[in-house]
Length: 306
Picture 1: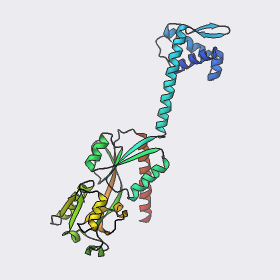
Picture 2: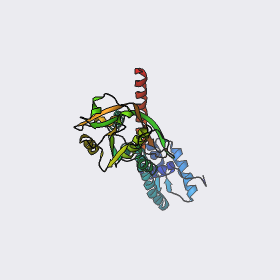
Picture 3: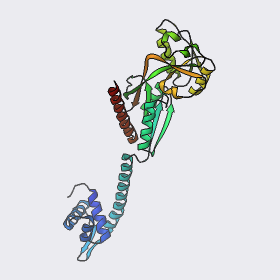
Picture 4: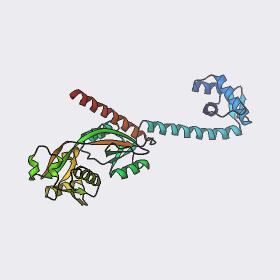
């Protein structure tokens, strides 16, 4: 009708009629009534103020205006079809990328299981990983440079969603010949007079703060020396007697000759998953779904063994 908008079906009717040279044959191909095509084409001609077809007993042929309309219409339908295909592919997460920030070791059983299950279900998704401290990861989440990050603690971060997923026992890493290595379990008072070493890189600052908080509470300022080395070389320095360090349960899976890990009694460290609710990356949505499912399984397991 005059003043009404042009719908996709109107364009497809005109294109089909031009290709088949007949409203009847176009209707059969599209699976609609011939009268529907004839009426909609006529409405469109009224809307445009010009005839698109010359009608005869043998069929229809395009006018000059009709040819121009069909040329544009085919391009429009092609672009819309391509857009639908691309959006559907994104919805299926056929190809994509998931950027993950980590503070803990990938040796963590929960995180390792999560990554493995996601890889198995969405094999074509490319995952990339980045080390960093809490501040770096939160900034990257807010700026969409990371999709999700795993951090210690259960703090709420402005503009971010946070979900506590698992906890790990805290261990002291020491030389195998250290006198404390004979103990099956330690208390904080056992390490008051020890020298600790941390890395300048993440999660070195986290470990530093954690040590100060625990040991200063016992009335002793700890001796903590930073080193510009990664986690593996830091453990190598521990083996060489340069000091002790703290490690999460996931790190204990790392095999470093000369290093012994001993747990601190009743000392656990919570780990949380952080992401932005404004991030519409379909790969992230699937990742969050698997994480929630894995968390539920873990809760059920703990409940059944309690």
